Length: 358
Image (cartoon, rainbow, N blue to C red; front, side, top):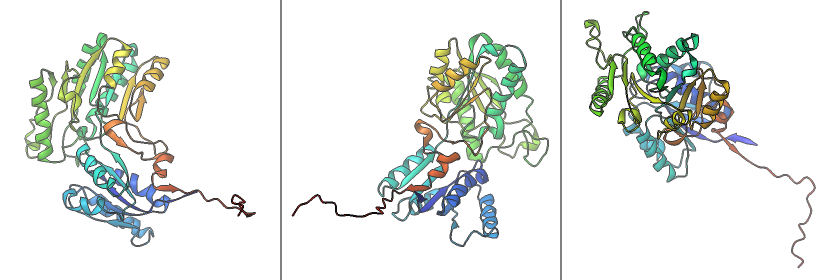
C-alpha cells in the first residue's frame, strides 16, 4: 500500500513562482501530506494568494503552512531537522548540494530540480520549408521566452553545418524584432530580468563570451529605448561560432543568451548534446522520424522534445539527469515522491511455525 510520506518542505524559485509551487502543493495534498511552503523572497505574492485560496477552498488549518524569508535565514530550520520527511527544492545547484548534505544527516528524502543547459539540435533535413520556419520559431521561443529565465530554456543551438549560416541569419533577423518591454504592456513579447543583480550577471556572461572568442551576432546590450532605461531589460542575444570548451556554452546563464555550435554528423550532434553536466531537457528538429527517435533515445536528458520545444503536461514526469537534480515532479512518479510504500502481510489462517522442535 501507499501512504503519505509525512511532513514536506516545498521550496519554489522566483522565475515561475505560482506554477512551481502548485507543482509541489498539489501532489502533496493528493497524497495526504502536511507541508511547509517557502516561496522565493523575491517573488512571494503569488504564493501568499495561493495559500489564501487554499484556505478558502476548505483545506484544513496547518495542512499548508506558509513561511517567508531568505533561504540563508530559513534554510537550516527547514532542512537540517529530523522533523521533516521530504524536501522538494527547485533552484540552483549550489543550494541543492547544501540541502542534500544537511538532509543526509537525518536521512531525509530529497527531490531536486536544479536547472539545465539545454541543447536544441537542428538537422539540415528540415529543408527550406514550413519545417524551417517552425524550427526558427521554436528555437527563438525556447530561449527568449521569459527573457531566458527558464530552467528548460534551449540556450544551446546545435545546428548542422550545411544550414548553419542561413539558419543563424534568420534567427538574428527575427530576434531583433522581439518586443522587449514592460510586462504590463500588452504589446510586450518578453519582459525584464528579475533584478539589477541578475542583469549584471547576464552582462558579465556576454563579456565573457566575447573574451572567449564567440561571435556576437545580435544583442549583447540593454535596449536603447529611454522608457526602459531604469529597468533590468536586456536584448535577445546570439553568439555564433561557439565551442564546447567555452563557459557560456557550459554554464547556465539564466538570461536571453543563445550559443550556436555546429556539427556535421548525427553522432557528433549527440555527443555535443550530451556534453553538459546538466541533463534537464533537449529538443530535436528533423524531418526523418527514425533519426528523431534515435537521437531522442541517445540524449541523456529528462525530457526530449521532438519537433517541438518547451511544452509540458501534468501527465508526464518532469526532472533531469546529472546536475539537473534527482526525483521527478508531475505524472504518477511525481505523486509517488510524496508517498511511502508499506507492505502489510496478513496471515488469515495463523498456525505455529514449527521451526524449533524443543
